[in-house]
Amino acid sequence: MMKKSIALLILVLIGFASHGQSLEELKEAKKQKEDSVSAIQGRIDDLQGQIDAFPGWKFGAFGTIGGSISQFSNWYAQEFPNNAAGRIGITVNPYAKLDREKYFWYTNAQLNLGWVKFDDEDDPDDQDGWRLSNDVFNISSLLGYNLTEKLAASFLMEYRSTLAKNFNDPGYLDLGVGITWKPITDLVVVIHPVNYNFVFASDDTIFQSSFGGKLLATYDKSLGDFNWKSVFSSFLSYEDSNLSNWTWTNNFSYKVWKGIGLGFEFGLRDNKQEALNYAINTLGDTNATFDNISNDLQTYWLFGLTYEL
Image 1 (cartoon, rainbow, N blue to C red):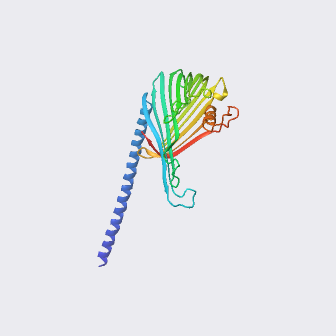
Image 2: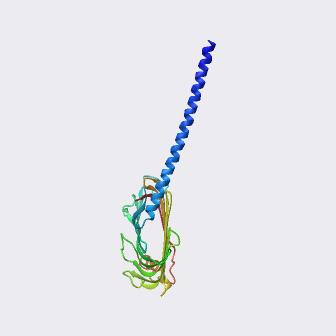
């Protein structure tokens, strides 16, 4: 009986030892596979980097969609106990880029549209439909001839206006020549001391074209699933500082799953011609001038889902 017990104990110990050895072998095999996958992914990333750096056309687009809808009934704690409200916003940023040994051609566009709705169901006379709240349309095209690795002689066309309402009223068209500087891979700085700012508007007493200088800086950076694009565009009028303007937009996105992610966009603008037009034609201030208007900083922001092509 003792011999059988000892034999059984030995068999159990051998089984545990065999199981432990097999587990260690499986862990080692798993580690080797993971190392192999990492090596393969490294080669894939290297090939993708070579593809991205290869001269030729590159096309793409990314955008943000944000919105909310609400409905209240008999919610007496608020001023309007019965109401329906909503907000929808969308931005689209397509681009096309061509890089050659001697020249390059970069084209970018931005579209930002938004609508808001507030329906006071106890007031039959209120405006209960969807109203346009955001309306931004920009497109630029930069053509450059490389002088050195980082400097190029360049020509820029940039157009800014609204799209859904009052298209080209006002509209701004910049045409100019100068130098483009590319100090690092992700940054493009356009410096054009020779530029004419054409302004199209029904009220030419406020909106005026002028000759001046143009500065456009674009920074486009990707870190894994995180993307950041920043665009600063400014015009400095040589004729009258009241005709100068600048706009700065930033787009942030984080990819979560198959091109879908979270996005945040904000924009800042300073334009005294638009401020004067708003004071006279919207607020009805007939005494408003460039000297007495309140030229507050223009801002917008949008948060929501993003999709990248």
